[in-house]
Image (cartoon, rainbow, N blue to C red; front, side):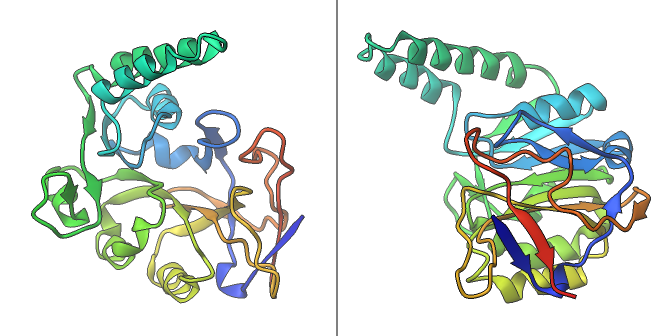
Length: 253
């Protein structure tokens, strides 16, 4: 399968790309230099997978702040209870239990913080906060950001540009790219960190009229050395689904 991107997406690959996170969905390619020079990791969107955060800490033992109001220790315990009715599929119960234990092991430690809030909306609701509020709560710079929040990223793309000087790197998953193409291209134009990698998420579709993938994963770097890399996917990329084939990307010249 081939996806096509407009020339606004031209990029230069990082010479030190590494894959962080689990195989398939949940893993991203980032610059090793950015990880090593980061003083903090802030993640928006966790769900039931914090393998990226775990692998990041293995490379650089930084403080982690993970924002997601959809999960909690109580939530995962309820998932175990619900799975008990599936006595014909005991592996589901085992998997749910492993998820709970992994959550406790990672987030109930001194410098890994799960913040039960969604990021993006300016509202008085206790489960929501703005990007500015997130940054106001921390004092360090050289922050690496991982963002995968199912479309809410467009609420603060312009704000990311305003705070880019505090970032060591960024990996962001962009959804419904056909509806937000202008906002995405403006963001790439105004964001001064290097665009060093693009991966099409096979969970999205490809627009029939021009081949535009509807879900893209973009990696930006401050500290890496770059070079021309014409081929996408990268050799470290993996399709998001185990049974899927990755999407080859072509950028208009």
